Amino acid sequence: MKRLAIAPSALPGIADKPIAGAVRSGERVFLSGASALKPDGSIAGMGDAAAQTHAALDQLEAALKAAGGSLASLTKLTTCIVDRGYRAEVYAVIAQRLPEVRAVSTGLVVAGLPLPELIVQIDAEAAIPATPPRYTRPYTFESWHGQGFPWQGAMVLATDEEFFLRGQTGAGLDHTGVKAKGRGVADAAAQADLAMANLKILLEEAGASPEDICKITVYISDRAYRAGVYPMIGKHLAGVRPVSTGIVTTGFARQDILFEIDVTVVRKQGGKPHQRLRTYHSSAARYGKEQQPLDCEFCMAVVSGDRITLRGQTGMGLDEVLYGAGDAKVQARTAMDNVATLLSEAGATLADVAKATVYVTDRAFLTDVNAVVRERLGDNACAFTTVIVKGLASPELLMEVDIVAIKAGSR
Image (cartoon, rainbow, N blue to C red):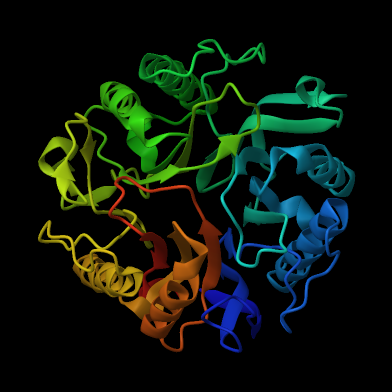
């Protein structure tokens, strides 16, 4: 595992401490969230969505060059904007800068980015495989769903080691739009049901299966939709037991989308199934102060070869007790205690972390939470991303951290 393009960060809470623009392990490149924030704390393209998008892509290009790749190495783009009104400008620049790239994509409207002046952040994934990537259901549009900008991509991009999937919503695979257009819990359930059915179809067409899924990240626009969405996930992924992170986000690419799911899909190593540690049923787990009868099977850590992917960790201790009610800093300490324990059980340490993604529910929490996470990582200058979101699984949860690690023996 090589840490590349390391520079001081201007992120709140970790100013002047180094993070890696890119961390490469084998073909896979883990990237820090890219924005118009410069290492000195200034903002490129103040108030200009197009200029900030160019600045973010410049960051990604520099990090990928250090890792031995280029923008053509991008496999997935998770593009976070603070207002849907910026979407046409942002995506037009991405299309211009990536004319031959068919990365899969997820588009989110978020509550905030590391500084209030930031308009866009691209949390990208990349790979530099020995053989060219394979695409499932590639597409090209002169105007993406009538939104005024050209777009090309694919539903699945497969490399030698991994499958990257476009975020799945309640829209048909024929690009005809969302099927359930209401805003009730039943509509969210219907969208999730279709998205999960589409996911299975795409995996089969790409030569993968649900058993290859390591992680799901579930985005909804209202916490009330959890009651409709998660039973559908449980129905379609029965027996898989992925790790999970659940985010309440402000919005999606279109107003009628209530649900979107991202998946991490890694090929089995040597034909052996992934190892799933601390399996549990969601109905027996606590989210904040209460249990939620969601009927899903999950686990706390997935080991796929040398990679370890953890469930998003919060102020809920591994003993199912909420620590730090009302105190994001204490919750962050608990989350990182959990991370250290889970990594140890999987045969790794905090020094093996390749990427950390921090979510907070209020900008006021960002500095303290970032500082705790970065402090616990010590000298490990991993890739690092921070996002301010509308909410998490319960109102009591103020922060969450996603962790991916590469066991030391693979370096």
